[in-house]
Length: 491
Image (cartoon, rainbow, N blue to C red; front, side, top):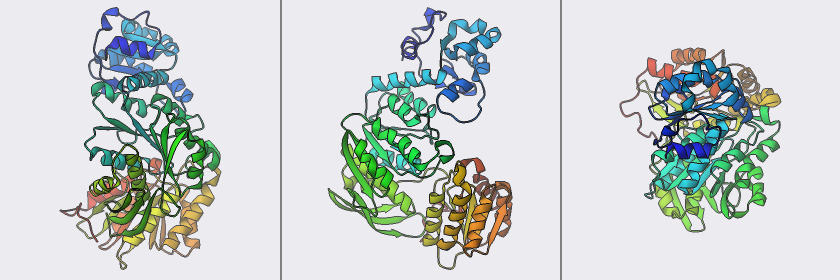
């Protein structure tokens, strides 16, 4: 892409820009001045940009790093007009390489929209209160197995900054056949609708609606409305892939201007999983019934929730023409994203399920039930559970109920970590679980577990992102060695 085209697409005040720059080629885009490479376009994001675009919290004003980015070789810096005036003394010498805009995040998104339009390929978009990243990875894996080149979000870059940065990868390589993109939200500011305006989905996948981010949305019905922006933002005549087991998702069929494909386990659905069998750690078998016929699936992930993610991936893939049997075969070689159901076997004889990326009450209990179902009868089943954030007024009761359900699932020991996890412990004790311990933070939980773990234990580590329960695994990896063949599947 020529810099002149990028500038036209972004818009803004070009009056002070050196015309000699316009013919430069640009492929790289950055929002972190420390990662700027020569020739990049640097977007100087600031607090008003974050606030206007649905981000919670306080953020650094990157305008103060614009001079460093330009000194490092950035071809252009995109800066808010008012912030430029505040930093004019340090930025004056770079004025010929600064594009002034009203909102730097909106400018980033406009550029991504223009790049998407120039590319013109199909988009599969995935949202849901849980499972987005795993479903995205499974969908991308199945499609890539068919020989197509797939663009997907790095990690979980699924918001108003990560999403456009992913799309801008098309400037470096326009040869992608399809994009598989997860779209997230955490506020009532129409975040998913904004992402759909950048890349309107040809296929919109809705996984589930859970009381996640309820602190900001206010009710589960408002969460459902926010998630429904995905099918409302879909291209006319597109296909919505809906979870038939979730009534709020299933009801979104009435919003679809196009075709609907459903998936599920309990409800009648186009793609349905039956005879689910968890075979130790790292493998789940099930039979998938579809309009194309049945297929036996061996999924190298565990848990009912991952069966649903696999069904969603097959359904989305079938919409773009991948036969169900081929998709089922591709699932055999799928892997789990980092910190999402990773299985680690330690030489000392214990096993850890690392699901520490995030948590909510339903996901925690589902993983605990999977832990119990997959473990040998004699194993001590331990859950290290961090508090679950953004539950608002529901936090206390949600933690108590989750604790009760953990005890009912058959967990032998609970280490509850930080804050509202005290109510998790309260609920577990009420339901009869005797071995419960509280930890003030993840470092303390790591210390407790490291000094008490023993051969035969099976441990689930899970918590909301802000609790950083990955520290528990990091401590175990420092104190104990992994098996030589740690990736081997145990039955």
